[in-house]
Length: 336
Image (tube, rainbow, N blue to C red; front, side):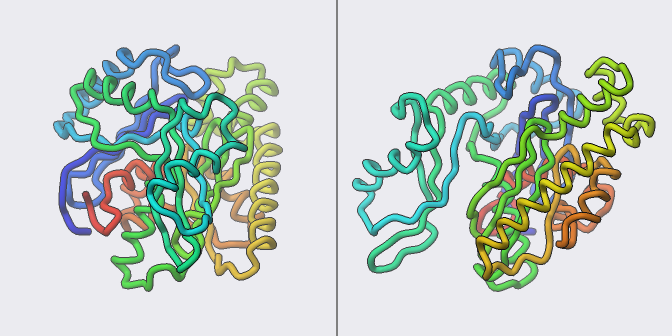
């Protein structure tokens, strides 16, 4: 991948922050640090100043000197849609775009800013990726990064990070653009998401809720553990938790739900050419879960990080949040 600019890609989750470090030479490091108690509540940061101080300390501990940051937008604060509209001017789009989100936004629609990217046009119509994000988000994020001694250069939802990886993967491998379909399984704590890319372009995201927190809840209840202790043991790979009867039952349920989503998408999009399901997220390191999904879903299950690098050691760390590294990549190919 071509080198252009040193950049950090940051994803702030409910329990941990993931920081992809791009020195301009491809995947190098993904830093993961557990977020202190009280800094996150229901997917939202409770104190921008405290989070900024925490990020600054994490970067200092790891000796990271890069200051430019591309930050992931929480799903709770943005909406992304693939929309088809009659051909119109930029001015007409500004007026009409908010109405494309009226089924999703229950609050005052003026609280959001709207943006779009044109995928394609005909004489009478246009195909867009449309985004609605809270207006306060950019201001809060800028202040938080400044507190951390960083400079915010961009914001984007997860699917943009995945999309950039797919685009670069196709270019590096000499593939024809807009030919292949992709499905990306993100095994998250709050929800499990499957992002579908039709002919290499983002199409839709399907959510399965609750996410992997159900594993922790089930194991904690069966074993009489505190949820916090159960989570730590599960993440550390403790076999008595990973292979508990309660966890195994949840693995089966999750795998079946994923299979149903995949089957429904294929039924609704009969011309798709999906042959692989690329997986990532915190649950990607849970081997019993991954094996259950592999044995249940008909498609070949492949680590998403394998699209970024062939190094198994780097793959395992990047696998947790490959979209963070995608944030640092130029959509035209290579590192930013």
